[in-house]
Image (tube, rainbow, N blue to C red; front, side):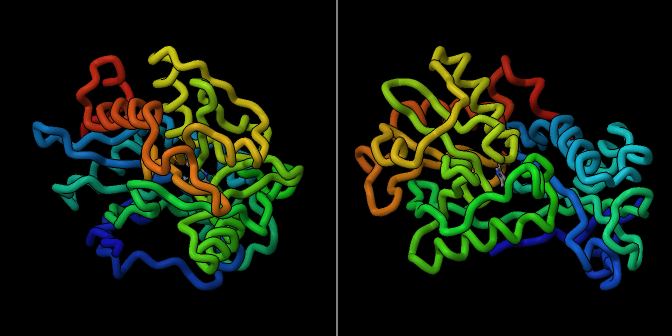
Length: 306
Ligand code: PMP
């Protein structure tokens, strides 16, 4: 069950969650015309709150807005203003558990028609906690009957709300078939990602993940995992991945803000190797956890104390 904390940043102030409203005739509601990002806020051993890669999340939001043509965000929201808003939100809610923060730029203009430029936008941010979206000990995946929307239709590298209908169709199909999540293929039948997570496979000691030209979201966890692997001297490859490579992979894991690095133990009724977390996944996951909790000096710059 998800828990949304009581105070929400909306527009330019903090308001009770029940008062953060968008009109039903806004472009955000009519067309799903909003872009967003989600980052984690973890409690370190000494009780400080650490936001993960805040600056990168801000940049991705700016890039998403730019791709879609929402030009009233970066003009009015500098990174400094963004940071101040997040700080005030976190201080107002004072979470004492590990949580996530979702920040959305909604196009709040009323009945603008099907366009994006020059329209009023409203930023919202809220803190929430939720149960893991994948089983932490190992997820079972099914190849989806739905394909990822290609870059030339709705760009996956823009995290745009309306595009998530594609993920919802794919995830629901997996759930209906008694799987935890899905493998979405791109338009050419190559492996893309899960419904809302990137995918990695291990073959003969090499770490492999689909390259950005396969219509993936360029995940911030994905990028961190590639950095970790290089530091651990694990050879990394961003390339085309065929579905059948998943069937014979030594290890598979999914990556994302809400799941960290979660092992995959089955794909299309085929067990992945031993059916439990593999050694490379484990190594990477441990290093990733230490980064989130600020215990790794080398990566200290990736977290912001709030
Ligand atoms: N792909 C999709 C479609 C997603 O929604 C997400 C979650 N944001 C990811 C990948 C993972 O991205 P990140 O590591 O930035 O959370």
